[in-house]
Amino acid sequence: MSKIEEIDTHVKSYLYDIGYHRWSLVHATVNRTWTMASNIVESLNAVRASTYHIHTVIDSVKRFIVCLQNKRCSCRQFQFDKHPCAHALAALRQRNESYENYCSPYYTRERLLQTYEIPVDLLPDKNKWNVPQYNATYWEKIAERPKKQRYKSYDELSAKKYKVSCGNYGLEGHNKRSYRNTPKRK
Image (cartoon, rainbow, N blue to C red; front, side, top):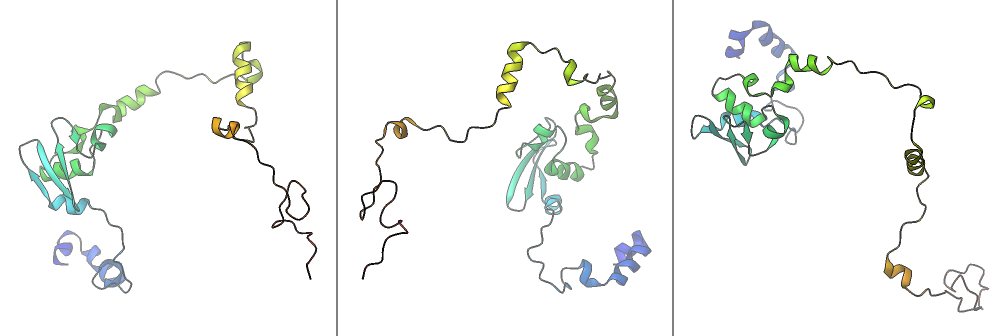
């Protein structure tokens, strides 16, 4: 609490006012063992640099390799999203570096403005569309209702069809177990 008081005295008084049970797991009145927490805190405490650009980040029980020079992480999120994943952020924080240098230029304000630089015209009313006939029939066929029965395999089509008949009366379409109008035997 003394460290919090050094930062801001209002935060310390706020934490006292709301009670320890609201923000401290030790004083919690309910069982919070299943509480989901961000593992980035554990990652920040477990970053080891093997070289200047390559870092090992331990996240819970998993180990991730982050290469800041190539903007890659073994979780592969850094490569796909083109901005630092949680593991890369932990490595950057360990080095006291800003994450902005590791984001793709596509996330910049300039690129966003360039995206909407070219005006996009609205489509005219659907009745005014000039659709060739071969395309129109294709789209009509797609818009049809789906088939009610599934496509059957060759084995199902070639199998012999057995007709069910009743053991009591010999009638087709039901059996004596499912027939409800069977007279009761004495």
